[in-house]
Image 1 (tube, protein in one colour):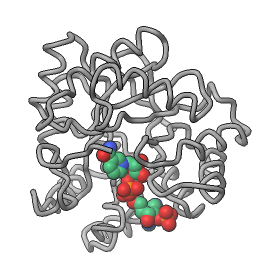
Image 2 (cartoon, rainbow, N blue to C red):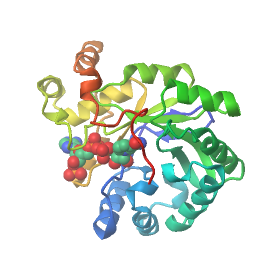
Image 3 (cartoon, rainbow, N blue to C red):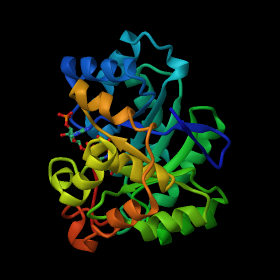
Length: 279
Ligand SMILES: NC(=O)c1ccc[n+]([C@@H]2O[C@H](COP(=O)([O-])OP(=O)(O)OC[C@H]3O[C@@H](n4cnc5c(N)ncnc54)[C@H](OP(=O)(O)O)[C@@H]3O)[C@@H](O)[C@H]2O)c1
């Protein structure tokens, strides 16, 4: 798999594996199958309630832990500095690992306004070796600038909603301007938005004998965005890593960009200034 170089000198593989809903014994099978198919970046969160599954899959996997990139997220209930610092350690115990390769603040919760304390906790946890790469998720320009101004530390990644109906290109540019890698969550719109049935994607996919999903992943990669995609089906898992043998034209990319529906395309209720995440 190709790799992205981060502003902290670490690298990430080009495609990440999402784990929303991947839980229990079936989850362990799904994740170990994904690892066998070549996925190394595993995206979890306290809120996904699957840290036990992630730990179990790591222990069952034939791939050594050092080759896996385990990424988790800080929930809204722990934005106070002390709470954040303790929870990071608790999450490591739950998964049964000594360090996170990557760790993000899940949502800024700007109405509460404690995300700068949370960021300081991540900065300090990184200094102690509990986390290798620190980043954020769902941060808008003003949230990024506040934590950078307060701590002098720029996040390595910002994981944001991005799919063809809500391409979030302006925020991708904000990230680029600060040397922050964009990760795309719900690149296929989950099961909420039926993006993969769109005719524009179907036509482009036919041209390359690929699937609409593969076209969406390529569109992200060619825009220097790392897609985090969830797939339980082994067929989907395979498809989503078979994306390094074709290239979209500039015209294709523009056609996909033109699918954007602005705010109407966003997963409902997920604007980072409105969405309140306290669990
Ligand atoms: N930071 C955040 O706030 C945030 C928010 C949302 C999500 N995320 C992360 O992003 C990850 C991905 O987002 P998501 O889980 O919401 O949804 P998604 O990846 O956009 O879509 C997952 C759905 O697409 C299907 N699928 C996967 N590959 C496919 C293919 N090649 N062709 C057709 N269908 C395919 C999956 O089916 P099967 O499972 O049946 O294969 C599943 O139903 C999450 O799991 C999570 O790790 C982060």
